[in-house]
Structures are given as structure tokens and as C-alpha cells.
Image 1 (spheres, rainbow, N blue to C red):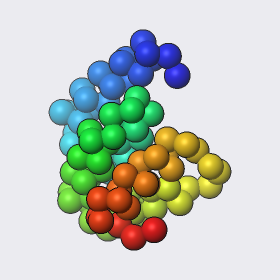
Image 2 (image 1 turned 90 degrees about the vertical axis):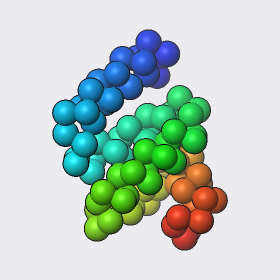
Image 3 (image 1 turned 30 degrees about the horizontal axis):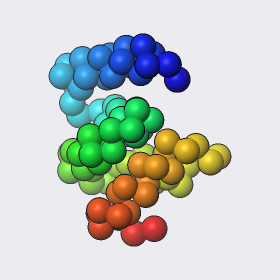
Length: 88
């Protein structure tokens, strides 16, 4: 993804988060976007916030176990596991 595309997506997700912070897919997708841009601390914080708001969210709890081998999802999964918040 291009830098301009990443920035535009971040802006859209941050606006969506302000208008409706209770969407579990929003937190998951924003965390993946942060991971894609190399902002792993922000990715982890966003994932944690989503997991706190939605402890039963299958989407957030399955991060890194989605079909395919997406490197961004894998990167976020590694950060979450290394933080001790989830087992591998």
C-alpha cells in the first residue's frame, strides 16, 4: 500500500472510531492498518482497546488465525502474543 493510501485509511478509521467506537471490526482493521504501516505499538494498543470493549469478539480473538497468510495479520498476531495478551 502506498503511504498516501495508508494515511487516508488511517484518517477514515480514526473518524469512524470517533463516531462509533463500539465496532469490533473497526478496532481489528485499524490495528492491522497500524501493523501494515510499521506502527506496532499503536497496533497493539488499538487491538487491546478493541479486546477490552469486545472481550467476546471472535474477530479480535482470532487475529492471525484468519484464512490465508497475510503478513500484516501475522505481524499483529506476533505483537499480541509477545505482549502476553494471547497465547499462540
